[in-house]
Amino acid sequence: MPTGYSKSPLELLNSSHQSKVLKAAIFSRFVLLILSILWRTLLAPYDTSAPLNPNCLGNPSPPLPPPLLPSLGSAIENGVVWDSVYFVRIAQCGYEYEQFYAFLPLLPACIFVFSQTVFAPLVPIIGYRAVLALSGYVVCNVAFIFTAIYLYRLSVIILKDPNAALQASVLFCFNPASIFYSSIYSESLYALFSVGGCYYLLSRANNIAVLWLALSGFARSNGVLNAGYFGFQAMHQAYDAFYLKKRAFLALWILISGALRCICIFVPFISFQAYGYYNMCLGRSSDEMRPWCKARIPLLYNYIQSHYWGVGFLRYFRFKQLPNFLLASPILSLAVCSIIYYVKSRPEIVRSLGFQASVEEKSSMAVIFSSQKPQRSNDTQFSEKYSSRKQENHNLKSRKKISQGEDLAEGRTVHGSLEKLGYTSAFVLPFILQVGFMAATAFFVMHVQVIDRWQHVSCLPVRLYIGLLR
Image 1 (cartoon, rainbow, N blue to C red):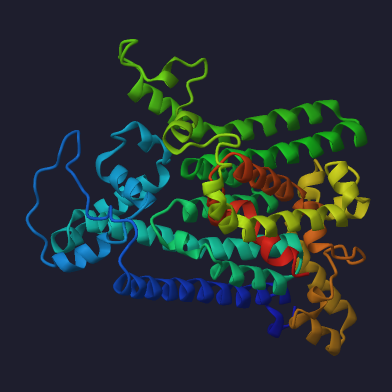
Image 2: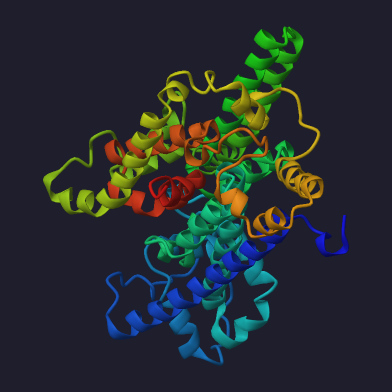
């Protein structure tokens, strides 16, 4: 390859775009921080639980000397409101009360680790609780920045259009739910591991994908739904092996390995429920046991959601909750319209769950539809296609077009003759199925306004920010 082309055009394009996404993500966090400080200064907070910090129930720590900068510590602690109170409290004192088990342990564990290591020297200066809060802010904001990078990479694989992927990622950085990604909420960590896990899955790094998607189940309960991606993959690859290649043992092995991967993704959530059962039920008399302990399947999470927050089928359908339905209507409408657009564009794909995809499309998306591994990864094959085309043609004009990414924007896939489908490709079907399930769950079962925070769910920005714009 000539000296001036040590990197493929796609690699250069990705490096440039990833740098833009990184800058947009960092800039958006600074803008949000400034706006948060401004509005907290001008307006009284609606939630006043930030100053509340009673001693831990078990093994209370000895009193610490007053911090050197109490005003700074107090300013940091003022942001600990709503669900942030639970996460910081769990990091400080553990799972003291039954309702605390609604908040999964990944974020509190990260907060605790950072407060004991990186930010431990700040405890005498601003106080321990302020250090916990600071650790939470740093973890969530850094996780968001990495999420934006992984979203761009994932979007390039799905859309085959780096420019559209860049638009999606930048819009994600400034999405309306951005405040939840910078607050001490589990959204950022869940988004990082779910989007990153999907990226590794489509990059054929299945073991890494299992690990990342399993960690998403330690961040939020809906992480268990990410097992569906491996279920979808195993279903298609087993069909390919059994009916097309006539290899029954290969099909059986694919189904077994897919089931094991799904189980691995379920393990974090199940193990946490077992931990709750161990703490709340074992060693207690029948009279002391909570009702959920005596259930045939003692699932603590479902009981907490129902008992403390009134979550259940149609339980939120009350006239007084109409404003919350209106609040959720923009994002819910966008999700529904996105699904409808996909269904109308590819009805045969939806009806057949992807089994009626064209031969060219199945070949292009072998990561899902084929039981045989390609010789190169998608990104490498994509780059080499353009590199070989450049060398064969020796055409200065087309070389210039390739370096500017115009061929990508004109919609050619790695297989040359296959017209780019982008958002309507069969690649997107498992994401569409998941967002449909979650949108229905949010509307009929959960507090519907929570869907405003779900713009990160399973690559949802790829669909919401690009699908309806194309």
